[in-house]
Length: 246
Image 1 (tube, helix red, strand yellow):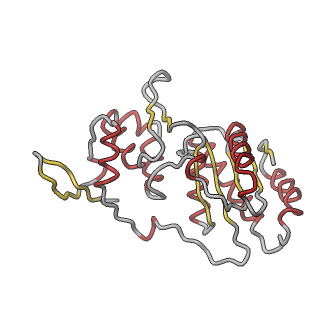
Image 2 (spheres, one colour):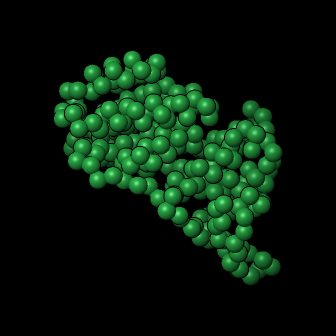
Image 3 (cartoon, rainbow, N blue to C red):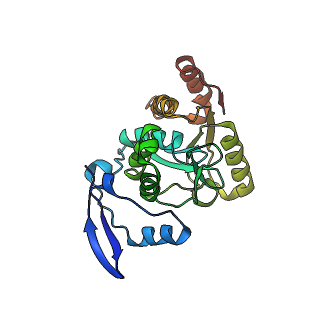
């Protein structure tokens, strides 16, 4: 069990406290709550939570992108990092949106809000609902990978070899953003869109498919990625029946 430490305010005094995260209850979030959480939170990172990057001659850098940097991109981030790939993940939306008690009442957070804060917030609102729909498990996974969801337009670096988006509108945003950056890039980048449905099961299957693609791209037999990418994608699509753009 993961036991984080917090600096909590009790009757105006700041105290350090450790407790089981499954029993933590937070108040309704606002901007100041988020800022306080980011300032006061003390993270204990275990060896299992650290990204392991392999020292490979052919290692390439990857970015995985979905709308909110929560489900599809983070599942792919998880499996790629676990296998030692150099990977980052982002979202292209204007804010992070998670399902709420109804379609009309989603949970909305600004990018940069810690995954742990979202976990505590949903846990305080309706633990039964958010456990049943998988959001608590998803956020628990995410907070062990990195601090918070990152927005593509403001946080993305400029040195990826391969960028993989998980839906067409994300692909369009990435292409437009890179076009606007113009000549700031000094090397080519491959942008691949793989349409993955935004649910937990399809995200898991999509993550495995993205891992297989990355393994094919990073194969020692691939010496000229620009030339060999069409053949790699054709072979990969023979195994995984996803609609793709490149």
